[in-house]
Length: 227
Image 1: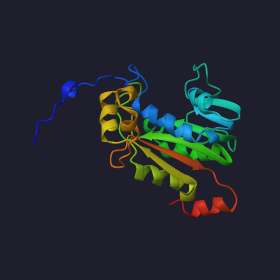
Image 2: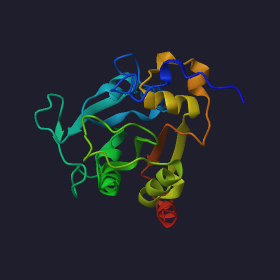
Image 3: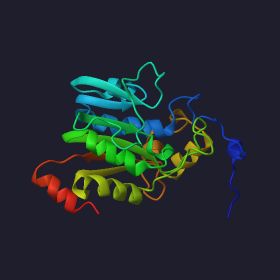
C-alpha cells in the first residue's frame, strides 16, 4: 500500500481553534445554512431564536414578531431572559417557529429544553433544531460545560419522544472529509462544494431536525408514537 501524504495536516493541533471561523464560514455552519435555507418557509409568524436574530433575519419569511432568548440578561439583543433547562422557562403556546441551533449539547438537561420548546410552540408550530454529531469541545463552554454529541439515531429518538415520531423529520449532513476538516478547524472555503455536499451517513457532522407540534387527531397519533 502506498504511503499517505499528510502534508500540512500531519499535526496535533488544529488549523483553527474556532472551527474555522477565522478562515471563513465553519463547515457545520455551512450545513446549518443549507438546512435553514431549505426550510425558510417555516421561519414565519412569531419566531424565537437563541442569543440573536441572525437566522431569523437571513431566512425569515413573513416574520411578524422576532424574540431572542438568552440566559444572559446583559445581552443587548435579548427580549426573553430564561434558562432553557428550567421548568416553564418559556411562555406556553406562543411561538410559530423556534430556531434552536447548536445549543442542546451545552445544556446537561437537554430533554427539559425539548419539553420547554414543545410547550412554547403554538399548535402546528415548528422547532428547527441542529445538534453536533462531531465537534471539538466548545471553547466558550469549556471542559465542564460541553456535554453531548448526538448521533442521528439518538437525535431522532429523543425528539420523537417529545414531539411524537410522525412530527419529526431528521436531516443529516457530512462525510469523512468534512468531518475531519471540521475537527481540524478548516472552513467551508477550504473544501469544494461537491466535497461538502456529499453525504455519507456513517460520517455525519451534524443532525438537523424539523419537529412540529401537531394538533387535533394528528397530535394524539404523534403522542402514541412518541416512545
